Image 1 (spheres, rainbow over the protein chains, first blue to last red):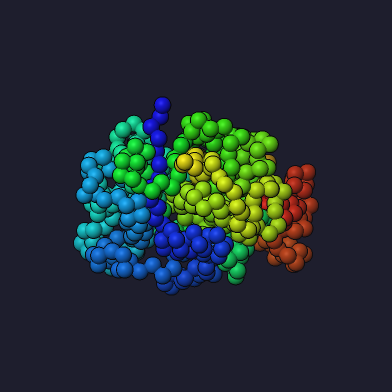
Image 2 (image 1 turned 90 degrees about the horizontal axis):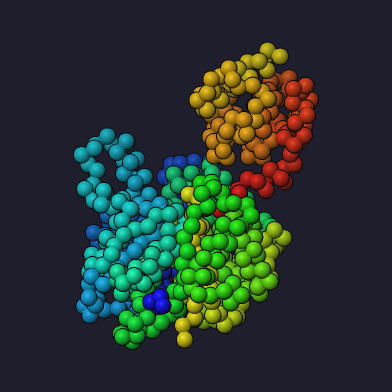
Length: 417
Length: 126
């Protein structure tokens, strides 16, 4: 029998609040975290196709971090450190009472230190002084910076690495944490998903890909609208989510409060197209199906799906097609919600924040709304999608995260009792 | 006619450069995606090159209508030729001029309703 793994701590930095309490309250209220993008220095802002973003507001790094980290680290690293600290405290995890080599850190990040990268590159070409590139630059932009920083901050000496699979990065990080604990590489894994790349280059790049919403630049709160007929692309967001995963035995031994069980995980590649999912949704269905099998659960038992649903035309359609394909008659009974409707697409952080929303839904019996769901698109309509919060005692939930590079992941979270 | 030839030559040269192919093998009948092998991202890159080469801006809604090399030639001709521009008040390809080479394939292309083109504009899942 597979070793059981549970979640005992949560932490979040999001466009609707820093801290899980604030995040969850705003999510249930359906208050949009999307705002107009702040100008990038002298760049002509009207030349950007999409000018709405899910920006984390009122984040003061100095309030959470020492002054050196507040100055030198990339924003995504700051988010990651803050979320991790909250989750560790929330879990009541005392590192002085843990065997250090048994506590790992796995981070999911899709873009990494883009803010710092763009800033230093610009500075280099403007000032023409290669010898003035800060020595902290390289350790800050390596993709494993955040997993390293968290280990240093908390003395976690177990497995330590970063997974980078674009928009599914942190779902894979949770999945790999599950695998690490099942295979006894670690008893506890601090999982963090983080990205903060609302930069000119990234906003322009996703714009060129025609991936972003462009129709609601004057009405930011309405721009992210998964499953709605008026959707026209995703909204670039930023944030971090952190979760403490540990073996059930370890959690019981230290009498930790248990949010949910992480029961299953699947990772696949569509081997199809770098940015577009296969039209029929069969690949997503296969991924969800494998995750359910890993959790020794059947499609008929699923109560809730935290959808990847980024608010792109194709992506939302295909995901619902996949859900219908897999769940058959059950598809009209499950609740479905799109966290991105409220906070935008936080890229590498999306899987972890989706998992946090799901853990909270299972705990509270409330599913947050899919906001801006005003005119259901028949191509992706299911009765369980709602613009209002819904009540349900959830036993089994799926969390989906799909990424560029043709990769898919699904997690199964179960009520623990 | 001369304008058309000049545009065609410049476009073929741009295509050849972008696709790293011999300019001689590219004909107006070639489809960008099928025959020349452009994927959706290549197609956007190509539009960037064309916009630079011909100093114009191609709206997203127009891109979906550009299926064959000949469609792009006709489109550019319409946008760039003064006579054509006055004949068609809206340069953004709502009323294509009949052209012997491409009439049979044009309806799906240049006449593609704006709605359909928009619907295809953001088919990504990120």
